[in-house]
Length: 584
Image (cartoon, rainbow, N blue to C red; front, side):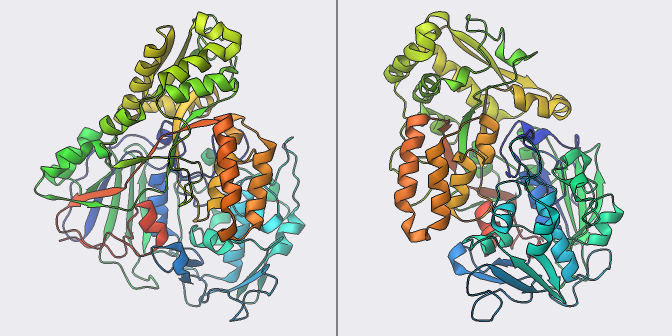
């Protein structure tokens, strides 16, 4: 994706933008004979596994597409086992070069795509190349080419196709990938990304044809223009049956020819239901087998005799309040007058570190945990969660310190003038509403002239104006889950100037960039000193506010089994491997 897309590559980076998808849904009665129905918060805005997938899209794609290798256990340290590759490359089996740069993947024989065509090494090579080409900031560009993006800051290409084709090639029935330099998390990245698709099918559906002549036409293509937004053809246990855009419903059917044997369930139905109270009621009466719910529903769920709640592992997500250092200035109603006159804020409002720190000290985090997260959550203390992270966040509730920083902001003018800004959220998103109401109340206590207005907007409005709103919003709250299990991923995404967060916010610190790159080259057990230094810079700069991380849980009808997976990707993300799920 191009730089102006809102935080590309992240799984659920904007709760408000998560509504940018296909439209509204009605309830779907549970059918006998193995139909599993799910009420989800929003319909996926793409099924293209190479695109920026929201959580709902990832949930569906995991049942359709497969990766080359998969995690062997719930811990990433358990290693890997083969999937569409017949073997996991190691030095011992000769499939990984001694210099750690060249990986050879023998493609599994006898595997068919859902359209009946056979999987080939050419399809695997095409899929990896397409993943890099269609997203300017693909995860794989860095290890394969040594670049953070296919494009430079002026949007001109800094990569050429010859380099891509040399690095990703076919040797008979093998995919050969040669990295720019050894890259510690490369296999973890592959195990985290099920994206193998048929080259011929993709081209027939309007996607890149796999040739040098056309690759630039598809570089960084926007989600809305993807030919695969509502189409899919993988090798996984379920295949796409129907996408009802108007009702926000996606239906999958069992792949009888799946290489691992057919799943027990005949059909999966994912249907969008906007209001959480409706999703909760549908689960209680049996209209659905599973519902996406927030922790605020746990008390109600405890009283439901026909519903099972399974607590999951601690969340891998980092939830933050994001400050945009410079918003769109023209025709931006979210910043009011656009001036520091008590009736708005300037476009660069959050470029002032004292404004950011004032906000950070204003929130009563414990109260938010109690009232919103129901205390099944932990305060995040570092943008790089790890055993060695600080015990306490650098910013805790301290109204006196908040006042000190606000009085210094803009040379003292902010305290005198006050400010007004608006924060949009999707109507019906109760969690966002609760968060913004508490932010507004906290700032009013600091200074009655500080006004944050929670501004509900309809889902249709967000769909129509999602990209524009992303550029206009001075403040929003987002959650990031790692793309793969390596702390470098957190460091790069959250703090590096070319990472998704900083590309969106405008934050940049040269020292952070240097430390991030050094961490990539440093063995995992020797990185802590680097991460600790990055924590200190984060505390000094306050580019965003660390909030909390709530434990995951699942809620489904009694009798449903097989919902927990031993694959790190499913387990840590709270996803279900539907090939193993059964229902009575």
